[in-house]
Amino acid sequence: MSFPMQSPEQSGDVTFMTSGTSYTLPQPGKRPLAFAGSEIAMAMSFTPDLPYWYEINLYRSNDEQFIVAIRQFFQSENEKDTVKSWSFPTIEHALSHIEDYDAGHDVPVPHGDFAAMAPAEMAAHAMHTQAQIEEARAHFAGLVGEMFFEIDAAQDMAA
Image 1 (cartoon, one colour):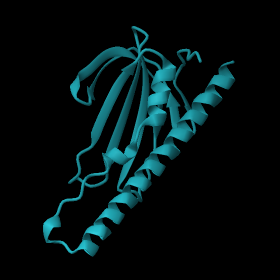
Image 2 (cartoon, rainbow, N blue to C red):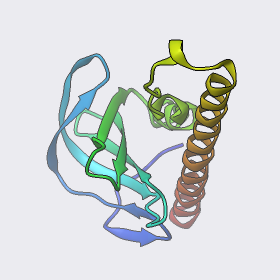
Image 3 (tube, helix red, strand yellow):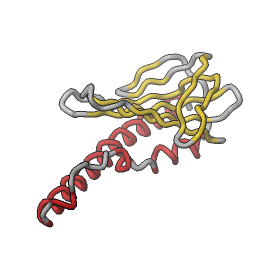
Image 4 (cartoon, rainbow, N blue to C red):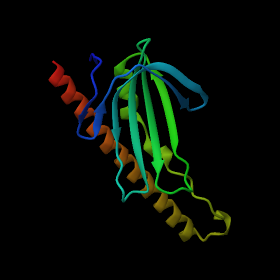
């Protein structure tokens, strides 16, 4: 799949943009990823009723790398927003990473005195955490599906 540079254009909840900009993004377990390039797609799942939402950004660097940034924002000021980014040699690798991203890892581990809890209380905490993990995965998967649909539609229009 080729992905040509495009002018700013909005389609649904996905924005396609270009501009020569410098970026510095955090990477899990590595130094920040600094590059110059263009954002070629962005999707956001903001819904006022949810306690958090995601933003996915896809960039093409000037040296033809494809960068994925996944941001998680929180409604509560007590939560810290997060950004993770990765660089890939092809757009196929970048899109595969977006598709394979496990939002279940974004669910915080509950805190408490588990040693003092009755087994039923521990089971309730585990069930609640499992429900949060499934909800996060479904939420992110819905956003990815919308983003890929819009990317494919843009590719069809460009062809």
